[in-house]
Image (cartoon, rainbow, N blue to C red; front, top):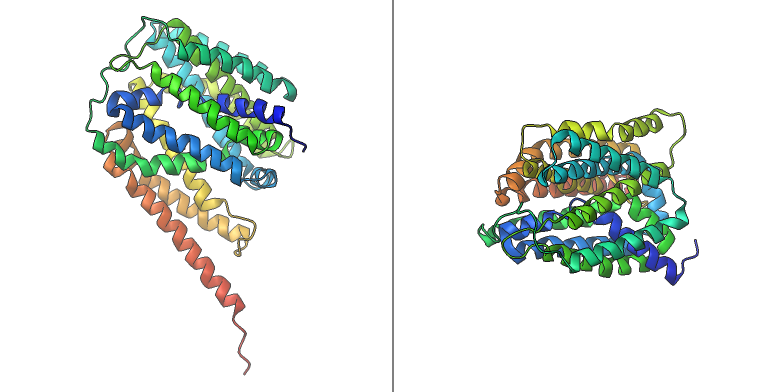
Length: 377
């Protein structure tokens, strides 16, 4: 596909808006509150560099191979992301004073808008992203006075504890882009230069997000809420579109299941909203998907084309390893993210890397065995 400088610019902005979602718009504020600017940098640097690395390393052919061989995981990433955006929209409405029923109505309206936007023609997406980017840029760099304190005072925890989370942030942000279908499209249509544009454009949005935190309070004024809702709608629309970009045979179980789960996304988000937990606890709970489930899948199940073990065998081994890693990692991630016991976060990561290294060792032994000449009697 021929790529132009204009295309790189447009699709780079598209990628920055599709990635500025409920994580990029809110997690930096919680990190600033708890860990100060150290927490923000621990989040921002791997975030930008991980996605930039994806755009520079993964080729369009690589994107197509991932979608062909792991389309279910790409679709799963998108559906979880849509649910997360809808939950985020509903809970932001609760934070600014709406009751549950009104918040759900706003969430449903946002879902309807996202589904409608998702069927827009391809050529319109960079333009839509450009308009949204300009609006968000103005809102974030010229924040209005007044608002609602939903964060509290800055740097209230021991800053040294955030360093335990650095490997997990690197792990998640380096590998999650591999399953992001919106990045696949940006890479194919905008080329690697689109991700250079992304790195600049997204960094500016992150800095603007940090400016919402004035050192003591998070200013969540109406126009900021509009920015958050519009960005979440855009991300939901982009990922709803991404589920249709994955090559799946119409009429198959996977095809029907992906459509069903996408249709049930508002119901799932509502069920999560009514859980007897705080917004922050549930919000941080979603980090288990992006810090554990998805990156572990990438490192344990997505294999390069030169993989010497038959794919079916490698996939079965990877699924077993992935299941073990997730079962062990869930409680540790819960305590690490929600309980601020960050020193627990490296444990599941070390286990995942050990499983990956063990698999590589088994591959090497199997390859050596096949290369040994058979002995003659």
